[in-house]
Image (cartoon, rainbow, N blue to C red; front, top):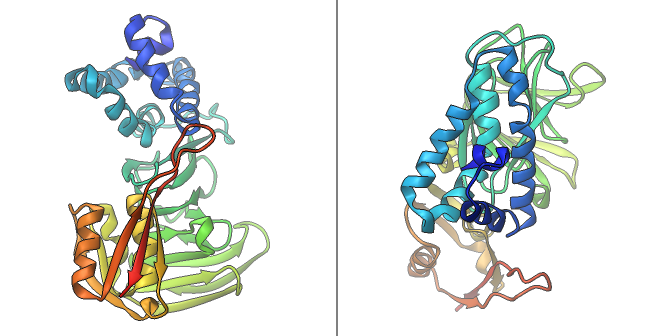
Amino acid sequence: MLPAFFEGTLKSENQKKVKEWMEASDENREVFEESKAVWEQTERLRQMQKYNAQKALEGVNKKIERSGASQFIKLFQRVAAILVLPLFIATLYFSTGTIKQNVAADNWYTLKTGAGMRSQFILPDGTEVFLNSNTTLKYPVAFNGSVREVKIDGEAYFDVVKNKRQPFVVNTGDVNVEVTGTQFKVSNYMNEGMTEVVLVEGAVRLFQGTYFGEKEIFKALVPGEKATYLLEEEKIYFERVDTEKYVAWKDGKLMFRDDSMDEVVRRLNRWYNVDIQLTGRDLGDYVYTATFEDESLIQVLDLLKISAPIDYKIIPRERKANNSFSKIKIEIIQK
Protein backbone atom coordinates (compact mmCIF):
# COMPACT_ATOMS: atom_id res chain seq x y z
CA MET A 1 0.00 0.00 0.00
CA LEU A 2 2.76 2.45 0.86
CA PRO A 3 4.52 2.50 -2.53
CA ALA A 4 1.17 2.91 -4.28
CA PHE A 5 0.14 5.68 -1.87
CA PHE A 6 3.31 7.68 -2.51
CA GLU A 7 2.91 7.14 -6.26
CA GLY A 8 -0.77 8.14 -6.19
CA THR A 9 -2.04 4.80 -7.48
CA LEU A 10 -3.56 3.45 -4.25
CA LYS A 11 -7.28 2.72 -4.23
CA SER A 12 -9.42 5.41 -2.62
CA GLU A 13 -10.58 3.25 0.32
CA ASN A 14 -6.99 2.40 1.24
CA GLN A 15 -5.89 6.01 0.80
CA LYS A 16 -8.46 6.90 3.43
CA LYS A 17 -7.03 4.34 5.87
CA VAL A 18 -3.52 5.70 5.47
CA LYS A 19 -4.75 9.28 5.97
CA GLU A 20 -6.72 8.30 9.06
CA TRP A 21 -3.63 6.76 10.60
CA MET A 22 -1.47 9.75 9.62
CA GLU A 23 -3.90 12.26 11.17
CA ALA A 24 -4.34 10.27 14.39
CA SER A 25 -1.37 11.97 16.06
CA ASP A 26 1.51 14.38 15.45
CA GLU A 27 3.94 11.46 15.89
CA ASN A 28 2.23 9.48 13.11
CA ARG A 29 2.34 12.51 10.82
CA GLU A 30 6.05 13.00 11.50
CA VAL A 31 6.73 9.34 10.70
CA PHE A 32 4.71 9.61 7.49
CA GLU A 33 6.46 12.77 6.30
CA GLU A 34 9.90 11.34 6.97
CA SER A 35 8.98 8.10 5.22
CA LYS A 36 7.73 10.05 2.23
CA ALA A 37 10.98 12.01 2.09
CA VAL A 38 12.95 8.78 2.03
CA TRP A 39 10.71 7.34 -0.69
CA GLU A 40 11.42 10.41 -2.83
CA GLN A 41 15.13 9.58 -2.58
CA THR A 42 14.73 6.09 -4.03
CA GLU A 43 15.32 7.16 -7.64
CA ARG A 44 18.66 8.52 -6.58
CA LEU A 45 19.49 5.25 -4.84
CA ARG A 46 18.49 3.24 -7.91
CA GLN A 47 20.92 5.28 -10.00
CA MET A 48 23.70 4.54 -7.50
CA GLN A 49 23.06 0.79 -7.51
CA LYS A 50 20.38 -1.54 -8.84
CA TYR A 51 18.24 -1.94 -5.74
CA ASN A 52 14.51 -2.58 -5.95
CA ALA A 53 13.06 -0.41 -3.18
CA GLN A 54 9.58 -1.05 -4.59
CA LYS A 55 9.97 -4.80 -4.06
CA ALA A 56 11.22 -4.33 -0.48
CA LEU A 57 8.27 -2.12 0.39
CA GLU A 58 5.85 -4.52 -1.28
CA GLY A 59 7.06 -7.13 1.23
CA VAL A 60 5.61 -4.92 3.94
CA ASN A 61 2.50 -4.44 1.81
CA LYS A 62 1.89 -8.22 1.61
CA LYS A 63 2.01 -8.48 5.41
CA ILE A 64 -0.55 -5.70 5.66
CA GLU A 65 -2.84 -7.34 3.11
CA ARG A 66 -2.60 -10.78 4.79
CA SER A 67 -3.63 -9.22 8.10
CA GLY A 68 -6.95 -8.06 6.65
CA ALA A 69 -8.34 -4.55 6.31
CA SER A 70 -9.57 -4.42 9.89
CA GLN A 71 -6.02 -4.96 11.16
CA PHE A 72 -4.39 -2.41 8.86
CA ILE A 73 -4.10 0.46 11.30
CA LYS A 74 -2.71 -1.72 14.10
CA LEU A 75 -0.07 -3.29 11.88
CA PHE A 76 0.84 0.01 10.25
CA GLN A 77 1.53 1.50 13.67
CA ARG A 78 3.97 -1.35 14.41
CA VAL A 79 5.69 -0.84 11.07
CA ALA A 80 5.90 2.93 11.53
CA ALA A 81 7.36 2.53 15.01
CA ILE A 82 10.61 1.26 13.52
CA LEU A 83 10.49 3.52 10.45
CA VAL A 84 10.56 0.63 8.05
CA LEU A 85 11.09 2.85 5.01
CA PRO A 86 14.51 4.18 6.03
CA LEU A 87 15.34 0.68 7.28
CA PHE A 88 14.65 -0.97 3.91
CA ILE A 89 15.93 1.79 1.65
CA ALA A 90 19.05 2.81 3.57
CA THR A 91 20.14 -0.21 5.59
CA LEU A 92 19.51 -2.94 3.03
CA TYR A 93 21.01 -0.86 0.25
CA PHE A 94 24.18 0.07 2.03
CA SER A 95 24.77 -3.47 3.22
CA THR A 96 24.98 -4.67 -0.39
CA GLY A 97 27.99 -2.81 -1.71
CA THR A 98 30.36 0.15 -1.70
CA ILE A 99 28.89 3.54 -0.84
CA LYS A 100 29.23 6.11 -3.58
CA GLN A 101 30.99 9.36 -2.77
CA ASN A 102 28.15 11.55 -3.99
CA VAL A 103 26.05 10.71 -0.91
CA ALA A 104 25.79 13.87 1.19
CA ALA A 105 27.77 13.53 4.42
CA ASP A 106 25.19 15.58 6.36
CA ASN A 107 22.21 13.44 5.28
CA TRP A 108 20.88 11.84 8.49
CA TYR A 109 17.97 9.54 9.17
CA THR A 110 15.90 9.53 12.36
CA LEU A 111 14.45 6.32 13.81
CA LYS A 112 11.89 6.44 16.62
CA THR A 113 10.05 3.96 18.78
CA GLY A 114 6.72 4.90 20.30
CA ALA A 115 5.74 4.63 23.94
CA GLY A 116 5.64 1.01 25.11
CA MET A 117 7.30 -0.25 21.90
CA ARG A 118 10.68 -1.81 21.16
CA SER A 119 12.40 -2.41 17.82
CA GLN A 120 15.49 -3.91 16.20
CA PHE A 121 17.38 -2.94 13.03
CA ILE A 122 20.75 -2.87 11.29
CA LEU A 123 22.83 0.28 10.69
CA PRO A 124 24.63 0.86 7.35
CA ASP A 125 27.88 -0.67 8.68
CA GLY A 126 26.15 -3.85 9.87
CA THR A 127 25.93 -2.80 13.54
CA GLU A 128 22.84 -4.28 15.20
CA VAL A 129 20.77 -1.92 17.34
CA PHE A 130 17.82 -2.51 19.67
CA LEU A 131 15.72 0.50 20.65
CA ASN A 132 13.67 0.60 23.83
CA SER A 133 10.43 2.51 24.38
CA ASN A 134 10.31 6.24 23.53
CA THR A 135 13.75 6.29 21.93
CA THR A 136 15.10 8.39 19.07
CA LEU A 137 18.25 7.41 17.17
CA LYS A 138 19.84 9.55 14.48
CA TYR A 139 22.42 8.12 12.09
CA PRO A 140 23.98 9.20 8.79
CA VAL A 141 22.94 7.65 5.52
CA ALA A 142 26.59 6.58 5.13
CA PHE A 143 29.51 6.31 7.53
CA ASN A 144 31.87 8.15 5.17
CA GLY A 145 33.97 9.98 7.76
CA SER A 146 36.77 8.86 10.03
CA VAL A 147 34.26 7.93 12.77
CA ARG A 148 30.87 6.23 12.78
CA GLU A 149 28.77 8.59 14.88
CA VAL A 150 25.14 8.19 15.97
CA LYS A 151 23.01 10.28 18.34
CA ILE A 152 20.56 8.91 20.86
CA ASP A 153 17.78 10.13 23.13
CA GLY A 154 16.35 7.20 25.09
CA GLU A 155 17.76 3.70 25.51
CA ALA A 156 19.52 1.43 23.02
CA TYR A 157 21.61 -1.73 22.95
CA PHE A 158 24.44 -1.85 20.41
CA ASP A 159 26.30 -4.84 18.95
CA VAL A 160 28.95 -2.90 17.05
CA VAL A 161 30.76 -4.30 14.02
CA LYS A 162 34.53 -4.10 14.59
CA ASN A 163 36.46 -1.52 12.63
CA LYS A 164 39.56 -0.17 14.40
CA ARG A 165 40.24 2.30 11.62
CA GLN A 166 36.77 3.86 12.02
CA PRO A 167 35.67 4.06 15.67
CA PHE A 168 31.97 3.99 16.55
CA VAL A 169 30.76 6.93 18.68
CA VAL A 170 27.43 7.22 20.48
CA ASN A 171 26.63 10.87 21.19
CA THR A 172 24.25 11.32 24.15
CA GLY A 173 24.82 15.03 24.61
CA ASP A 174 26.29 14.59 28.11
CA VAL A 175 28.63 11.60 28.06
CA ASN A 176 29.74 10.11 24.75
CA VAL A 177 30.82 6.53 24.11
CA GLU A 178 33.69 5.47 21.83
CA VAL A 179 34.12 1.85 20.73
CA THR A 180 35.70 -0.09 17.88
CA GLY A 181 33.51 -3.18 18.21
CA THR A 182 31.65 -4.44 21.27
CA GLN A 183 28.28 -4.92 22.98
CA PHE A 184 26.83 -2.37 25.39
CA LYS A 185 23.70 -0.45 26.27
CA VAL A 186 23.23 3.31 26.64
CA SER A 187 20.32 5.23 28.14
CA ASN A 188 19.83 8.98 28.53
CA TYR A 189 16.11 9.75 28.81
CA MET A 190 15.92 13.53 29.17
CA ASN A 191 13.33 13.40 31.98
CA GLU A 192 15.55 11.13 34.12
CA GLY A 193 18.50 13.51 34.40
CA MET A 194 21.19 10.89 33.92
CA THR A 195 23.17 8.96 31.33
CA GLU A 196 23.85 5.27 31.91
CA VAL A 197 26.30 3.01 30.07
CA VAL A 198 26.53 -0.73 30.77
CA LEU A 199 29.25 -2.77 29.08
CA VAL A 200 28.44 -6.41 28.27
CA GLU A 201 31.66 -7.36 26.47
CA GLY A 202 34.67 -5.73 24.85
CA ALA A 203 35.75 -2.24 25.90
CA VAL A 204 34.41 1.30 25.63
CA ARG A 205 35.86 4.71 26.42
CA LEU A 206 33.72 7.52 27.82
CA PHE A 207 34.34 11.20 27.19
CA GLN A 208 32.69 14.62 27.24
CA GLY A 209 33.07 17.14 24.45
CA THR A 210 33.63 16.51 20.76
CA TYR A 211 35.60 13.61 19.35
CA PHE A 212 38.04 15.73 17.32
CA GLY A 213 37.93 18.81 19.54
CA GLU A 214 38.34 19.65 23.20
CA LYS A 215 37.22 16.77 25.39
CA GLU A 216 37.53 15.24 28.84
CA ILE A 217 38.24 11.49 28.86
CA PHE A 218 36.91 9.28 31.64
CA LYS A 219 38.16 5.81 32.52
CA ALA A 220 37.50 2.94 30.11
CA LEU A 221 34.81 0.47 31.16
CA VAL A 222 35.44 -3.24 31.54
CA PRO A 223 32.79 -5.93 30.95
CA GLY A 224 30.24 -6.07 33.76
CA GLU A 225 30.73 -2.42 34.69
CA LYS A 226 28.19 0.40 34.68
CA ALA A 227 28.86 4.13 34.42
CA THR A 228 26.21 6.59 35.61
CA TYR A 229 26.52 10.30 34.90
CA LEU A 230 24.20 12.46 37.03
CA LEU A 231 23.38 15.69 35.25
CA GLU A 232 22.47 17.66 38.38
CA GLU A 233 25.74 16.74 40.15
CA GLU A 234 27.83 16.78 36.96
CA LYS A 235 29.59 13.69 38.28
CA ILE A 236 30.11 10.17 36.96
CA TYR A 237 29.99 7.01 39.08
CA PHE A 238 31.25 3.50 38.28
CA GLU A 239 30.13 0.16 39.72
CA ARG A 240 30.12 -3.58 39.00
CA VAL A 241 26.65 -4.87 38.04
CA ASP A 242 24.71 -7.87 36.80
CA THR A 243 24.49 -6.85 33.15
CA GLU A 244 21.61 -9.22 32.40
CA LYS A 245 18.99 -7.11 34.14
CA TYR A 246 20.08 -4.00 32.20
CA VAL A 247 19.80 -5.59 28.76
CA ALA A 248 16.99 -8.13 29.25
CA TRP A 249 14.49 -5.65 27.78
CA LYS A 250 15.86 -6.27 24.28
CA ASP A 251 14.62 -9.87 24.59
CA GLY A 252 11.20 -8.76 25.83
CA LYS A 253 11.91 -9.29 29.53
CA LEU A 254 11.47 -6.85 32.40
CA MET A 255 13.97 -7.88 35.08
CA PHE A 256 14.44 -6.59 38.63
CA ARG A 257 17.23 -7.66 40.98
CA ASP A 258 16.99 -6.11 44.46
CA ASP A 259 15.69 -2.90 42.91
CA SER A 260 14.02 -0.17 44.93
CA MET A 261 10.36 0.70 44.45
CA ASP A 262 11.42 3.97 42.82
CA GLU A 263 13.46 2.05 40.22
CA VAL A 264 10.62 -0.43 39.67
CA VAL A 265 8.16 2.40 39.05
CA ARG A 266 10.56 4.22 36.71
CA ARG A 267 10.92 1.16 34.50
CA LEU A 268 7.24 0.17 34.66
CA ASN A 269 6.28 3.66 33.50
CA ARG A 270 8.57 3.28 30.50
CA TRP A 271 7.60 -0.33 29.74
CA TYR A 272 3.82 0.10 29.86
CA ASN A 273 3.60 3.83 29.01
CA VAL A 274 1.77 4.72 32.23
CA ASP A 275 2.16 7.25 35.04
CA ILE A 276 2.60 5.50 38.40
CA GLN A 277 2.75 7.58 41.58
CA LEU A 278 3.79 6.39 45.05
CA THR A 279 1.84 7.28 48.20
CA GLY A 280 3.53 6.30 51.47
CA ARG A 281 6.66 7.31 53.39
CA ASP A 282 8.27 3.86 53.48
CA LEU A 283 7.60 2.71 49.91
CA GLY A 284 11.09 3.75 48.86
CA ASP A 285 12.53 1.16 51.26
CA TYR A 286 10.90 -1.80 49.52
CA VAL A 287 13.05 -3.85 47.11
CA TYR A 288 12.00 -6.34 44.46
CA THR A 289 13.52 -9.28 42.61
CA ALA A 290 11.40 -10.57 39.75
CA THR A 291 11.34 -11.24 36.01
CA PHE A 292 8.32 -10.43 33.86
CA GLU A 293 7.90 -11.41 30.23
CA ASP A 294 4.32 -11.69 29.00
CA GLU A 295 2.45 -10.35 32.02
CA SER A 296 0.03 -7.45 31.69
CA LEU A 297 0.45 -4.36 33.85
CA ILE A 298 -2.38 -5.49 36.14
CA GLN A 299 -0.76 -8.90 36.58
CA VAL A 300 2.54 -7.22 37.50
CA LEU A 301 0.83 -4.94 40.03
CA ASP A 302 -0.99 -7.90 41.57
CA LEU A 303 2.31 -9.78 41.90
CA LEU A 304 3.91 -6.78 43.57
CA LYS A 305 1.05 -6.76 46.08
CA ILE A 306 1.87 -10.31 47.09
CA SER A 307 5.43 -9.46 48.08
CA ALA A 308 4.81 -6.18 49.95
CA PRO A 309 2.04 -4.47 51.93
CA ILE A 310 0.78 -2.27 49.12
CA ASP A 311 -2.36 -1.69 47.13
CA TYR A 312 -3.02 0.23 43.94
CA LYS A 313 -5.72 2.39 42.42
CA ILE A 314 -6.25 3.05 38.71
CA ILE A 315 -7.30 6.62 37.91
CA PRO A 316 -9.46 7.01 34.77
CA ARG A 317 -7.84 8.63 31.75
CA GLU A 318 -8.74 12.24 30.99
CA ARG A 319 -9.62 13.67 27.60
CA LYS A 320 -7.34 16.57 26.62
CA ALA A 321 -8.28 19.71 24.71
CA ASN A 322 -7.01 18.16 21.46
CA ASN A 323 -9.29 15.10 22.02
CA SER A 324 -6.37 12.83 22.87
CA PHE A 325 -6.22 11.03 26.21
CA SER A 326 -3.74 11.28 29.05
CA LYS A 327 -1.64 8.33 30.15
CA ILE A 328 -3.20 5.80 32.50
CA LYS A 329 -2.47 6.98 36.05
CA ILE A 330 -1.93 4.49 38.83
CA GLU A 331 -1.45 5.23 42.51
CA ILE A 332 0.50 2.68 44.56
CA ILE A 333 -0.52 3.00 48.19
CA GLN A 334 1.31 1.80 51.28
CA LYS A 335 -0.99 -0.18 53.58
